[in-house]
Length: 324
Image (cartoon, rainbow, N blue to C red; front, side, top):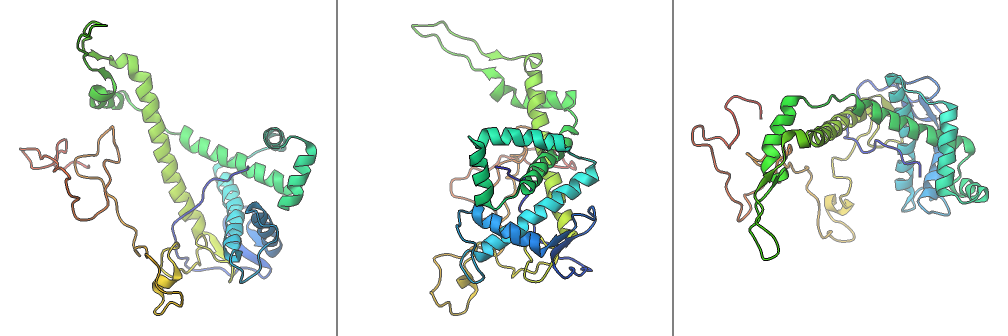
């Protein structure tokens, strides 16, 4: 219920960090003045809500196993709220109270059988009606942001459609010939004309372009808002520009980096650097824009070599001097 978009962004280091005011856990710059400061009271409420969402009857205390996870998740929720509202403000996107009320009516219908069940949810989740309205508002803003980004993508040109058709004709738009059997006559090969599948291709290429545009937006969104976010000592997470990590993968057992781990060495430790998975030369095409992605490593046994073009020595379809 009330899931927020935009989570999980790369680590960055802040420069020229402003101080977080006393009584606040974080400061986000370049947003409307009424949302840029995240107070200790807001964090305390978010902490209780996050613990309840995780099925914990009692919120964990410092030093307990689940405390740090709940704390980080609560900070993430608070930053989501500010970032999404800040982005919406920059894009000129707003929602009305009427929209919030209408959406809440639908949420109640889908998730709660009776008003008493909804009231029970408020109590057990530590939410006030104002908190719920805020979550609904964020959901509506998130949806409108995505719509604005994706709807601004132009439809593919005629030449792009034709190129895709030619590349996919043999695999997607051709029915192979069928030999005669006792029950049916032989069927010749049948190729669907471009005009019959044009709308299908346009839809497919448009969806791909929208996905690509939104992926670029999300990457830029994360780095932009992270650079504007400063967290107080004891509340820094990876999404704060003043976060200083250990340089170790987040999922790595601490024993991987201890000289003499008390519990002994773990079964396995992740690589400290994320492995690249570039496309195999010659496999990128209109049909597979990302190509066949393989981790960089010694060539796997049994992998067939990609034939090269006789004139240039390049993989088939690659033009000398052109951007791949």
